[in-house]
Image (tube, rainbow, N blue to C red; front, side, top):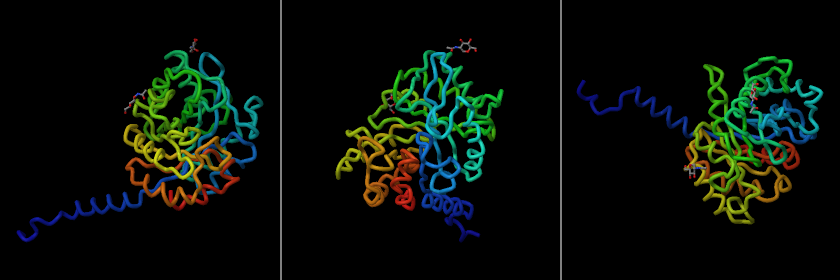
Length: 302
Ligand SMILES: *[C@@H]1O[C@H](CO)[C@@H](O)[C@H](O)[C@H]1NC(C)=O
Ligand SMILES: *[C@@H]1O[C@H](CO)[C@@H](O)[C@H](O)[C@H]1NC(C)=O
């Protein structure tokens, strides 16, 4: 009896083992933006590649201030004639593969801004009923009756106000078994000018920081220091479930910040993967990834 004193109880051992296995097996995933180029394949084809864990459908780029919200999916379909409603089948096909599908609101081109708390409230209800599990009046749902997993905020213009309210409201729709994911794509200069206040709610599940078009905090011709310092800043300051390295999928996908895949896998991923809230890599966009083969080149190291 006494000889067993000092040994670790079996349940603790298995707990420890479980923890070790889990952390060593913890791998990142790839998120990709889909929707802004008609020549990037369908949503179902994108999910069938098996390389992506998260899809952001881009963009709902008109909302707020009492405007009727508008979706823009470039050459994929025309929301005005309801031809985007067929995407529901693709959304469900993605979700069957355990891929999270978000609607991205905002983007670089559009007309959006929230004008008050009431505006945020109305818009959150609109998103819940038209894209999430709300289902009121499903005939008007722009992407048909499939319920998306969440909302992605890519706020790049307009005012910074009331997005914190929007995030809190979206999260308030969380029901048992019906989680609403909230994700976001801030620019890498910290704190983000437009999304900083919303990010400080600590309610985001995934934050894919755009480490491109922002020379002071991105990779620039052989220099990885700015990028690494910025990564540390983001992962140590922002309280989100997972932080992702957002990158252009091809040299021409952004004005600057492209990282050759060999350099990413050899020098950057091994370092940033050590952050405990590391989630993986976000790519802009599916179209550019098709041109370059970037996700195929990096997937094993993510
Ligand atoms: C919010 O919705 C209500 C009810 O439809 C409407 O009366 C009000 O004008 C809306 N507020 C804004 C800011 O659009
Ligand atoms: C949010 O919190 C961080 C600290 O974690 C702080 O540096 C930042 O200034 C805060 N405010 C905004 C607008 O980001």
